Length: 167
Image 1 (cartoon, rainbow, N blue to C red):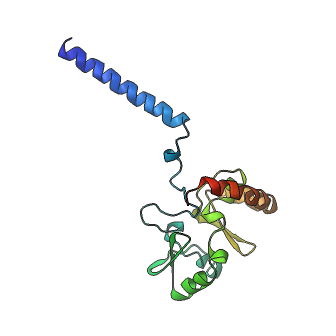
Image 2 (image 1 turned 90 degrees about the horizontal axis):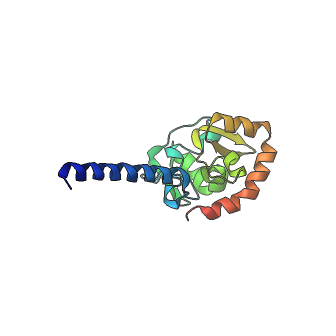
Image 3 (image 1 turned 90 degrees about the vertical axis):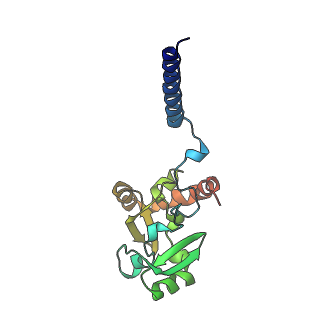
């Protein structure tokens, strides 16, 4: 076999391998290829920060999404939480179940469907004195149209969804 023919066969094999890998990636539910958020609380895999470093208490006190300060950090639920000031940090440490986002920061509309979809800290809602993060505006709009239904379904699905998430 000539060198040119060997090179051509190698290229065809390379393209076939890439094509097969691409096909498998689109149809195979490989556990390692799931969403980057496989924790029970959504955290950045590189920094360990929950909700992208936004202050969870500020949603309640300032009624806006505010970036936390690296000088005010606390650990809870396997995540690092940042705060704008010492008083927000103290409030969270005393009551993380109140100030932390519900469903670990996953979108409650996704959870209601049984799918863990990472919430976006810029698409949020405080409802019933609890913080909810949504992956997109459409999810928040759907939730607002019938919050009782979504919360009921999400609470029913949450234990099963949690079981699929890493500890």
